[in-house]
Image (cartoon, rainbow, N blue to C red; front, side, top):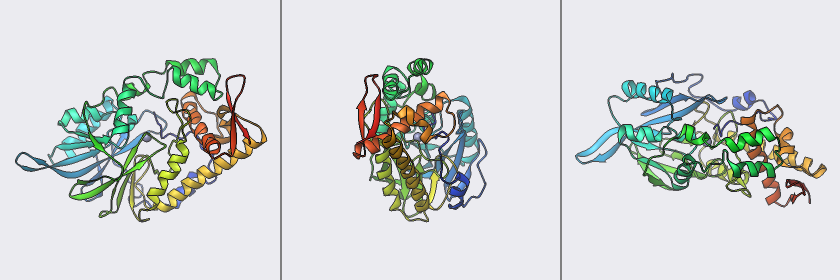
Length: 369
Ligand SMILES: [Zn+2]
């Protein structure tokens, strides 16, 4: 589920010119599959493949130590895991064999429940008898989703999309049937975990890292910030090239995910601009304040476009897709685009800028007040 795969956004600037406003300390260097690239002392970048248009995820290894029965045990903390498949596990084994200096993985830390981050957590925790550290809302959402209660398919999701104007019968059958989407990539979730909370600090590699909670992309995303090292592991909350997927889902149909996301971004704006940002997709970069401003502008532009369109003629989320996304969307992209369209319309609705009417055809339309 590339929840981070934003389908063909209508950018006011090309992504190339947006990116050129940022600085990339490692230039074009990328870690090879099964290898690592050191981004800072004792902090290694691992890159795993994904079977989507967004074809990779960045994972991190932090040199660490943990108290053991006979004193400190030296090893590594893994931050995020990759989806659960043979290719990912094979690449991890190569990393373990060649890059860990013979030391074990001591802890598995997951920023959020999406399959590209969570999928191999169970495998890694079993492989190393290592504990999972994760936020509770994310952990419980992963447990529910792996048992079929996800926002990616089934009757509830189909009814939600239909209420927002998506009526194609074949698409609706496909949404209903899409029950194994999450569990296909996250077949199991570790049976226990250690809880992370926003604002909580913990020791990793002899440094204090602070959890920064983020909302709107996933239930309660944990980004990790180390002030002493000037490093932010941003997860999916701040990405250099693509804008994070922000969707309203069937389980919380009146949600205001985009407003929550925009509010969450403000917390990152308080960090120093020269922070080294380690994102889950794209390259490590500097220029955090510039990137936050770009993301805010991106969403505000789309909100302005949508408001003008709704004032001209009431529209459903499905009607609004061509306003937000300029190219044809395949089925997979459309599922994410619909969630994003509802998220944008809900900002306007919750702000009192448009009204929502349930029409006789059972579809919500958003129009002028
Ligand atoms: Zn994500």
